[in-house]
Image (cartoon, rainbow, N blue to C red):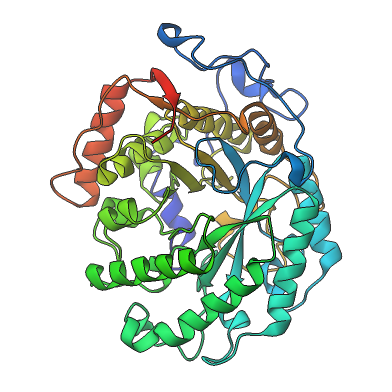
Length: 450
């Protein structure tokens, strides 16, 4: 999640026009039906395909996700996957230092109940590598234990490596000079050691999905030397591929590099990875403010669709796979009753737009005994005591309906060239134009291939 360490509560009120409540009450006939006990069901025969292209995709099939035997091929980007950014209910990610396998098992039981086929986890870098020449065996053992627990529940795991930025806090190893993070000549030796030691452990886990170089690296280690950061990213992705072939390795930058110059260039992010990774937050991208504070405004509700088009434009490939690695909605940004509908509608829009994988932020609500920015506490689909929230049931229904189905690519319109002027306002002009041209219903073609 992008930086918000300097915000005050008054910053949130600035989003909403005068006279509009910060928490908008649900309106219309569908809102009440979204509450727990009355969530609208995704019927097995519900068809997202426009009338002009009906019957190009077989009817929905729902299957229970049980064990690795039914799992999707790890590197198969032609099929839909649905997962969660895992947030441990007990001890947050401080759990690496206060490890309880039983507590993690309880979390993963509920995550499996939701139908998630993968999770994204955070290795807090200074915990795992306290010294430039040493990686903690104890922490690697705990990582092994988590991988086994996930495997036993049929859950694949994306391992996020250089985690210095997480939920508003910065975690930086004492030996890493922030100004030289992307300077391979200065920093590569300890960084490569860390990657190699984690890779060594991951070779033994069949549910290993891939390495994410870091959680929004540009939030913790920003740079105005885009070429240097791009070179670092390409080098580390190549090393991960060499050490762990047949996995999906990515650089999970936040939204900023797609909107303005921000550490990594959009062209490098688009062309150097097997899959485009996007963090589609209505608040942080400014979609919510630009839509008058309404999470159902097209700028927010269809943000996944428009950002996928933007990233594919930079890739020069309208069929390139897209992984929405982070998306979510805080109760500070809308009435809680709206969140199930937002999750459902924005995800279904992404499916129509040919987005491949979806990973909601996050699995569990945060423990309020810990201090975080207030928006962070309500982002989960599961409560601290393992109760599934209404949005969690919406997630479950979509995951069960679409997991493993072939991805279909929209063909109604072409994708224009990237914005000529690379800044926030001109990028939003591009996104708005795409939304206007694409309309709410996209024609569907065949699966992603070749």
